[in-house]
Every structure is written in structure tokens, then in C-alpha cells.
Length: 479
Image (cartoon, rainbow, N blue to C red; front, side, top):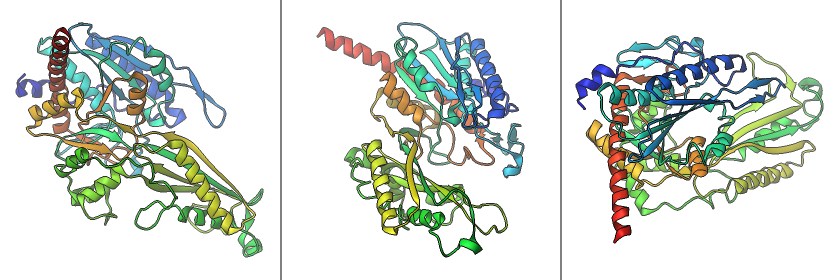
């Protein structure tokens, strides 16, 4: 296929309607998400796909209200038994965004500036979903035979925890996924602004609440300050005990389960393109904890980290309020890496905090809980999927990709891999500076068009490798 033919056809039309405020986190916008799912289903149907919009029922909010969940789209296109079947997962809900948050443009009006397409969902994840659809459309437009059979799983609750998706995957494992050979997810970014990457792992995430309570009501600091054990002082001491100034987690035993770094993986780090200055500018900080590429990548991908996110119950508005809060809740999370046991981490955290608290001899009550735990994910870089994607990247971009991990947590990758037992790959097309979840989220026109080419080239490469693999296996069996 000629680049010029691609370029003419693959201009970025925001078909899935960016003006829909498809924020799945805010309950009053749920109807917008559901409208978006209808648009996405219609777009797949226009491809000729068989589309099943599966009703997931409803869920209860913390305030007692019951809201319907958006349907999950299960789409299918092609049933050629000679072709491998590739399943693509994506989501069309987005993070909250308001112009006054610091956006230079309206976040729900796609705006092109200097070759960049700005809008909430541009890179996370409407852009890649549309690129995948456009890649399939290209074969039809050029009247080329489809090299693979396609299946689609598109949801509208990813940013709110993919409610109901795991149960659906389990229910469909013996039917919808029975003939799936490979699963591809394009919901992350390259490590650099220019060099393509393939992602083969991500960290997990264990979220913790540590609650300290003194009494039944807030108290005046003039009347009671100095004569009581203040919960916030206890909490600050507890949070301060978790991690030191070098980023090292102070919880005993927390590093015992970390997987050893293999020589094969160590070699992958040497060729990775990673500009410390560029990365620092992308995130807007003055200095990192570590000064070399290898140290930063190891601590971003291979080692656990602990981050403190906030304190609930403490006064946080502008001005001064001289109050002693009756109850405060500290919130922090630990990003785990492969071989760390989630249940062991939970126990280690609880025992550490209880030990620190007991030394303070405070009469206040302490409660430690882990409301959310997601496990890490790891794939094999020598899998057929990764070989095909590497070839496709070489074809489209003219260079080999970086093999990277993601420091964040991508629960769906682990979910798909565990339930279906299929090969799963993360195939990003967005650049490191795209600003997912941030102000001025964008995807460049270049990345969108070249990314669409990449998907199309990948279809061809996985088809060839899959057939060769099966022919080789068949020959070996005969011999």
C-alpha cells in the first residue's frame, strides 16, 4: 500500500463526536457516555462488523443512587479459518476536563494547532480506537483482502475502573474469545516524543486508606490544642514513616518479592531512547531522584514506588480555620512489580503502620484498609505478537522500537491475559508529551496517520508470522 494512498484516506475526522462529554467518573454525565457507545457501535456496523452491545446492568453509587452501566461493545468482522483472529480492546470514555483547569482550548472541541490535535480523549483513548477502525477501513477502501479476522471490545467505563468488564470477559471466554488468537491494547504512550515503543509490562497498584479518629466532632484549637492527641499529628507521623527522601519505601520486607533483573531484560535498557531533559520538561519538574537513564527506568518500571495522594477530613480551603479535625484519612498507593504478592503487601503495610502507631502511645483509633488492588502485568517480548509489531514498526517508521514497561497500572492487560490465556500486547501510537489525563491532551496528526499505518502493517505481519508458525508446527507434527 502506498503512503500517498494512506495519507489521502487517513485524515483524522473526530467521528466519535468530541463534543460529547464522555466523562465516566461523574454520574450526571453517564448519559453522554451511553450516547457515545451507540455512536461507536454504529461506526463498527458501518464497517460491516456484527455488533453486540452487551447490557451490564447497573451499579450503586456511594450516596445510594443506582445508575445504569454503559453497554460493552463486542464486534466481529471476518471468519476466514485461514486467518488469525486479532481482538482489539479500547475505551471511549475520558477523564474529567474543564477549560478553567488550564486548557488553552475547549477540551471537547477538537482543535488543531501546529499539527497537534487537542481535545480530551485525543490520545486516551478515542484517537487510537479510531486509528484502529481507520486501518480496517483502509483495506476496504483499497479493495484488499483482510489479512486477519477482527474482534473488538470497546467499553465506556475504563476511567472509572472498568466496572462489569471482568465478569463479562469470564462469561464470554468460551464463546466470543474461543477463536481469538491475539489481543492488542493501544491505551498507553511511547517513552519518548519521537521513537516508537512496544510495551511488555506494567506495574500494579495497591491503594490504601489509613484512618485516625479522636472523637465524634471537630474541636477548637484554642480550647483543646495542647491537651489532646490530635489525629492529624498521628496521621502525619504515620505517612512520614512510609518513604524516605530518596524514594526508598521504609516498610520492612516490601522489596523481598521483587523479581530479579534478568540479563535478557538488562540488555533491553541499553538501546532505549530516553532523554532525561525531555522527560523532565514533559512533567514540569526541576530534578529527578536519580541521574541516569538506567536508574530512572529501573525505578519507574522494575521497582515498587509509594506515593501519598492526600488527606481527607483536614481543612484544605483558602484561608485559615483553627480547627482540630476529629477524623482524618490519609490516602497513599504502592505500585507493585512482578512477583510481589498483593496479600503480602497488604499485611506488610498494616503491620508497619500499627507498629509506628503503637510507639506514639496515642489513645486514638487506627484503621488501615486497602480498597483497591490491581496486579502487575508482564508479557514475553519474544511472543509472535511482539515480533510482528516490531516488523511493522520497522516498515512504517524505519527503525526498531524501544521495548518498554509502563510505570502506571493497566488492569485490562492483566485481566485479558489471566481470563482468556491469550497473548496480549500493548501497542501505543501516542508520544510521551501527549498529556493523557492532563491539560491540553493531544495527539499529533503525524502520530495519528503513521499510527494508523502501523496498525495496518501489523495486520499483514501477524498474518504472515501466524501462518508460518502453523505451517512449521504442522510439518514438525508430520515428521
